[in-house]
Length: 327
Ligand code: 5GP
Ligand code: MN
Image 1 (cartoon, rainbow, N blue to C red):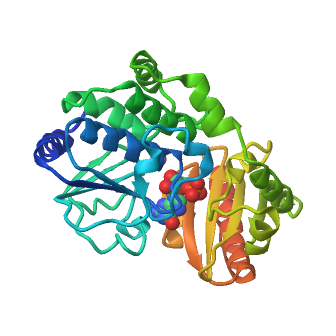
Image 2: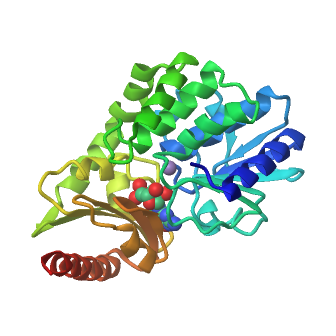
């Protein structure tokens, strides 16, 4: 059941999308499949409706998403002259990146439980497995048809955020939405191969370097990607080359952490958990956010400092969870 507030937000969003002539679509930095797919899904719809639409992702997009139609039209910087700002898959405005974090946002569509409702109109549905799943539901309701290119983009968001339908938030409803996308012309095997399975040679080398330093203490495991690793592997992106998902597949662990060194004295930290442990709470303590089983934060400092700090807090949290469970 959708609440009255959400219904009102949806009505306003529909009317804003129809009246805008030059919408600007943005999503979070180091965009993942859902951020990219949602940007493209909505962007293609608005372009099909005759709008002059800007899609802006300051970090560009990883090579594995370049198979998506329209991905070449995604820009790194915004141009002035937009008349509507839509943020997708982004739980707080800081995560839009430096250029975009100061502009007023009209519409915020997201599925993160930690979303700060920073826009004029907020459509935040934490029970949905992906922002692309929210768009799959609402775009046709708002009068924007799902063309094959739009459907393929949205399916990419759902497939990547659920790591191929294996996260616990996949529901019968999300599978029905997936079926609707396939009926609208999306190609599941193509999306699966391109967005989830295929990996560049450089990414494989990067995994090798990072995995060679994998450590484990009890049911906590962690490793890092350093700037040096990226250079050695010839990997140009600032993202994790999907390594966090791989770490989350290690059995018999409660939490895995990836420390990803950035070029601006910051460390991007990713937590993944099993057994119902809510890592978004830990991420929030460091100014980040996310979902209970998958969360992240960007922390100032050098790699050693941040590793020490995060490991200490995470171990304490695990201990507290354990004693809560025993009581
Ligand atoms: P990842 O670790 O793959 O970057 O992100 C896991 C989840 O946490 C995603 O849903 C992502 O949007 C969210 N997340 C990652 N980093 C941050 C951050 O710095 N701030 C917030 N609010 N959410 C984050
Ligand atoms: Mn998402």
